[in-house]
Length: 232
Image 1 (cartoon, rainbow, N blue to C red):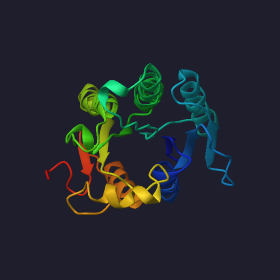
Image 2 (cartoon, rainbow, N blue to C red; image 1 turned 135 degrees about the vertical axis):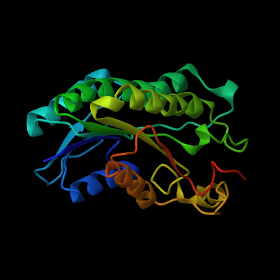
Image 3 (cartoon, helix red, strand yellow; image 1 turned 60 degrees about the vertical axis):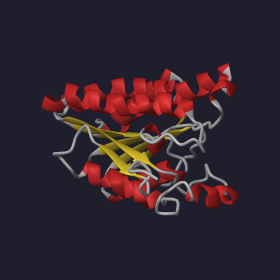
C-alpha cells in the first residue's frame, strides 16, 4: 500500500486530500493542530503544530511505524495574513514563516530519504496564485515571501532529485471556498477572479490527483485560480 502524508489535514483542502488519497487506495498520515482520530484503520492522525520540527519527526515516524514507507507528501498546511506591509508584527512574521516555511522544510527533509530508499516519491506544495499575481486589493507580502519561497524550492528540488525518482510539484490556488473564508466575504473574493467566482475544494483536489498520476510532470506550478495568474 502506498502512503501519503498530508499536513493541515483537518479541514478544507487538507480534508479533501485525505479523502482523495484514501479513494486512490493509499494509507494516509494526516496531521494538524486540531485533528481528531478517525474510524479508519488506514488513516493515522497526528496532532501537532507543523511549525515545530518535532511534529514533523513524529509524523514521519508514524508513517514508517504504521506503514513502513512514505510515497507522497502534501505540504498543505499554511496560514494567510493580509495586511499592509508595515503593519505586520514580529508575531505575524514568526507565525507565517513558522507554518509556511519551517513547516515545509523539516517534514520534507525527513520524507525524501524514505522516497529515495524505495526508488521514488512525490511532493506537492500548496502555494497561492498571489505569488505570480500581486493584487493591490489584497496586500499580502508575507504570503508572497513564504509561498514564493515554496514555489521556487519546488523547481529547485524537482531538478535536484529528477534522476532519482522523486517528483516535486506545486498547486497555486486562487481563493477557494474553505472554512478559512467566512461566507460574508465570498462575494468580494469571487470578484478577485477573472471568472467571477471562487474555486471549490474539489478543483484543488483534482489538480493534486492529476499530478499524482503524471509521471512525466515535475517542477510544475499548476495554477488553479480562475484565471488570476493570467491577468485582469
